[in-house]
Image 1 (cartoon, one colour):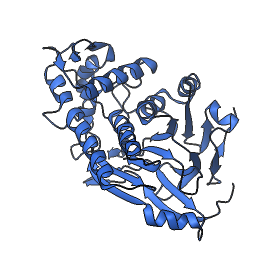
Image 2 (cartoon, rainbow, N blue to C red):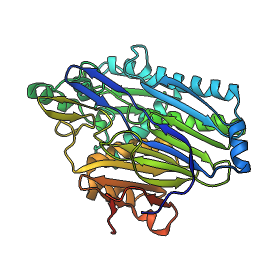
Image 3 (cartoon, rainbow, N blue to C red):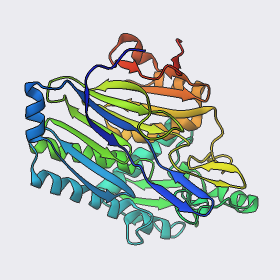
Image 4 (cartoon, rainbow, N blue to C red):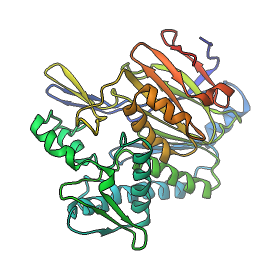
Length: 369
């Protein structure tokens, strides 16, 4: 293990929420973001004077924006307004949202939607095809039945799951480019864009920050992280990957990123326990139950948060062999896999050191390909 030299300037915890309801105990801990800077130098003074962060609860999680060069109240205001706008259009928990309207009209008629929603649904279908349905935006009926992450989380009866499985299938979504409409072909089908909307929102916020000349920032939408530019001292952002199933503050490795997104999925993010059995929130679209795998964490690194968000769920669901094969077939997308034996597997892009890292926990080891 390489020793990390330098003082921890900022430690950002991502999407840490605890829900307690009798036997239900849900921990949502996706990533730990560490900005490690050497103390007592000029860039530290600049950072202290200019850095500003603001947070709001949107998209069902804590959304935090940190600007390190040109903080602007207008930039923050427009950014959070944009996130709120996306939530109003795409949340299945807002009855007036466009996605809710699509779901209410399933099997009845197409619904004309905004450019935002149409774009996200289209990208969701593309990712569903890419992953052979491991990521599927029609998982809504199953998500609603399990309701993991909320007070009513439960284990549905087998008969209920069996009745819902025929409603899962991205091929039952019809898009009309001409009038920008979305149609679900069967009554009962439900879109759920929760696995991709945050990624889209992060990319949209980045556009706003750059329009205000901010070139040093971190966007943190509940575990969907997007880095903009470099740190104040012109080095890459140092981002810690959470140690799976451990207390917050414990991290396995640190990756160095510039203008890249990092999104992590794992069973420890949201779960509940019933009759001494743990049920996590990543559902297998073929069985209707939480995905069974020896992976404890998958982190995706990509040029934009939109693709990283969808792929993190899909790749975790696919498992190590198929997931690694998919990532290695894609350009400018990398992945970090961690299994229950504390082994770490890296995609081929790490071989040329285009993305560098430091292992920070001796109990974990990187398995060479």
